[in-house]
Structure formats: C-alpha cells, structure tokens
Length: 420
Image (cartoon, rainbow, N blue to C red; front, side, top):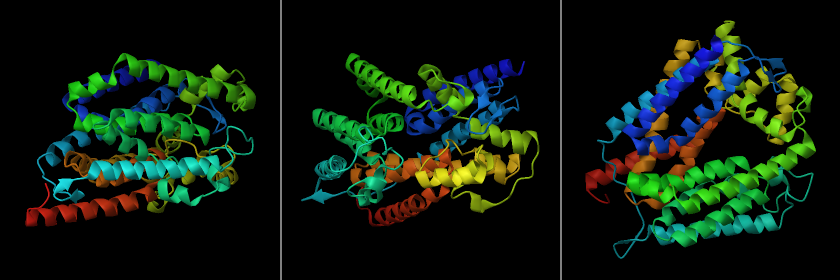
C-alpha cells in the first residue's frame, strides 16, 4: 500500500510541476537544477522504500514516508519561488555595463574572457596527467596533480561560468559559441568529469537563452533534429564510458552487483535520495532529538556523511580528503538540526531571501545586458544551488555579499538615473 501511495504522490508532484512550468516558463527554467534534484531524489526514495539495500549506509531501506516529507520541501520551494518572483517582477533594478564611446561592449569583452579562461584550462590539462590515461588520477584528485592548480581557485573545478557565457554569446555568434562549447565539454571529459558537467553545463548554456528569448523561439531553438542527434550521441558516449568503468571497477560489489547495467541502474535509483531517507528514518520516523546546531550548515555534507556512512566518521574524513562526497545533503541536513516544522520554516526563509533574490538579480542582469556581471552572478547562483542540494552553506557567503553590492549599486543608479 505504501508503494502505491508513493507513486500517487509522485504523480501529483509531476502534475503540479507541469502547472508551474505553464505559469512561468522562465522561472521554471531558472530553477531547473532544483527541479532536476527533486526528480532524481523522488524515484530514488520510492526505490529505497521498497526495501532495497543502501550500500553507502550498509542497511536496507523500508517505508518511513520519506517521499511525502521530501515532496513537502519541493512543493514549498515551487510555491514560494512563484510568490516571491511575482513580487520581484515589479521591482526595477539598474545595473552597470561596459561601454565604449557610449556603446555597450559587453559581448566582445565576454568573448575575450571566455577564450582566455578556456585557453588556460586546456593548456593546463595538456600539461597535466589525465584520468583517461592514468589509473592513479581521478576527477577527485586531478587538481592535486595539475601543472597549475591555482586555476582551480580562479575558475572552479569545472568552470561552470564558461557554458553560461557561451549561452549569452550564442545570441550573437552561434557557430563560435557552439565550437567553444564542444571544446569545454571535451576539456571536462579529458580531466575525468563526465555526468555532472554535461547536465549542469547544458543547463548553464541554455539558461541565458531561456531568459533572453521568447518562450516559443527558445523551444524551437532547443528542440530540433540537430539537437536531438547531438544529445543522443553524447548520451551514448557517456553510457559507453560509464559502462567500461563499471565493468572494470565494480563499485557495488559489496552488495553483489557486478553487471554494469545493473550498477548504473542502482547508482541512479539507489543512492540519489539515501541521505534524505536516512535523515527521515532517524529524526522523523524514530524521533531522534535534533541538534539545533546551526554550525552544521556550512559543511552539512560532511556532517551527514559522519552520521550515516557505513564506515562512520573515519570513512567520512578519508572521503573528504579525497574529495569524495555523497549527494543531496540538503534538505536532509535540516531534519538533523531542527524539528520538522522548524525545518520547513527555515527552508521557506532560504527560498525567499536567498534562492529567489539570487535568481532575480541574475535575470535582471541578463535583461539589462550587463553580461559580465551576469556571468559573475551566475557563478554565485550555481554556488547557491550547490548549497541547497549538497548542503555546503559556506558557498553562500560570497554570493550574498555580491547580491548586496548589486542592490546597493542599483539603488545608487536609480537615484542618479544612470544605466537602465
């Protein structure tokens, strides 16, 4: 009976999501990674609650109502995103952009920045050992062995701002931006990044188009024969690489899964939601007292791994040193810190004052043609999404400072009636 309830509730969430998409497509796409998280966690929770083994926790799942509790977080996200944006749409924000002799020169400046950043990253990759050809190198320790590790601090692990900038450039120079996008994907594949950069990079590339284009034009640009062929080829390539790796490594041998296809199925459905299931089972279903420790938020993933990993605190510390994490520690971490009601209220606060404001500023910067600032804003927005999926709240600090500065600048420009 519990299985059918989970399926029914998932269908209701799907219908509400479709309504949200129809009401405000741009807002839907802006928060696409949050929605994507939900539709990876929910099937995983349904799967776990049928009694499947959780390899990373060393125990079997059972029904604790996790689908329902997670669904409430998701519904509150949709509701308060929609309500907050409908208020913010009425607010004007003047923003700075680069000019030369009174002409906006953001596009050439942006092109130069992208070529410089991507060129440096590719040069570093060619001078460094690659996970493709060196068994001792992986995506987790690539930067430790890189020729110029300082580039990681400058551009980030996967330089997610690059495909976003290329999405902006696509509106003016399609062939150049697509060529550079393929180089970007090739670079990430070369340094051992596979699944996440393809999903997140594609989202980053399409986001400016979704905001700047009319909805119908965007959909015609996105859904065509050439795009579908490219997606199919990338999917096949990704499948082949993962299949060969799982055939060689057998990552789930501990639960007697040896077939690569079965391992991929388990990776998708068995692990995406296991931290939320664990937090629900321990702190909601079995009523363990919450910690009320807000100091757990900055590195929430590490806290949850110490709590739930089969190897305990020792395993979590070793994994952290290697750069290995579980996934989706938020909103799971909230059940460890607060009682359920307070957890939901805290989540609403974060959605209104952090996620919504960050997304609105990004949208306004794009619409005002402040493209360089938009790229910076996007990087902080991605960090916000990262905090609200992986539980690393320390990622919010610089984004909050940036947003505060943008709002102050906007107030000053409004007073002086400069820019637009």
